[in-house]
Image (tube, rainbow, N blue to C red):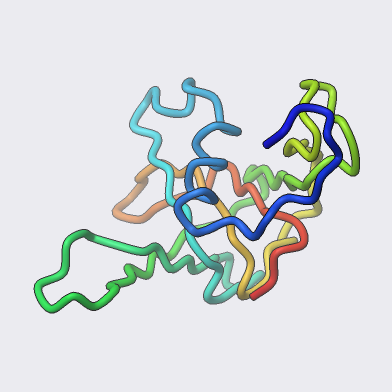
Length: 139
């Protein structure tokens, strides 16, 4: 990114999305067995209280194919939803087009969107503590 240039940014790859998720979520999330999972939303079930995300990996594969791992997260009323989007100009950080975050409506993630889910393992399943939705990125 170029500071204050206002130039448009190119399409970001999946690896960059994962990095954005890690950078946006504080290091405190690692305390207490918290894990992070970044990928594409595969399914959303508000009635069943679940969110399914497809992550790329594990690496490497034996035959050169990309492998995805589907993870199902339990979503509760305590789950926080956050939206990240590009600033239209120079953000508070001083960077043009930097990511800024804002609260999001519960269940705002839709199939095809990139998300990062912070989760804890409880009773043999992953419970979503926080879901960060990347705005404007529907595949």
